[in-house]
Length: 92
Image (cartoon, rainbow, N blue to C red; front, side, top):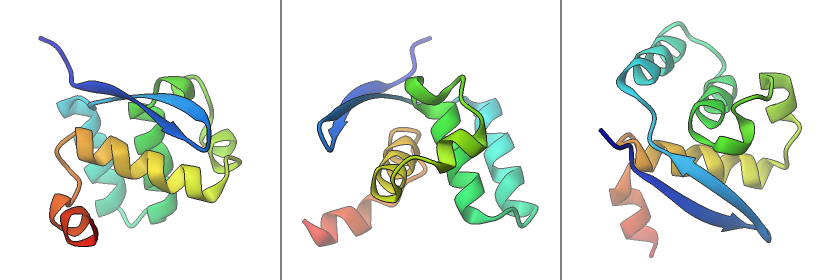
């Protein structure tokens, strides 16, 4: 079985984004359900779905620029079938 993946460039830096597994989805949904800070839940999604951050701590992920953080979290959610494509299409 192969997971979806893609390379994206943000601010001149290249990132490898991959679809998260069903188990990771479960962990992510639990974070949102348990009223975890939404930004922390996004950091977990980046750690799960972006190759460059797999070995980083959540605190280290918090130190990346906010615009890059937001775009990475959005891309991980989209490739994993969790993003809202209708909003993206409206703004295109």
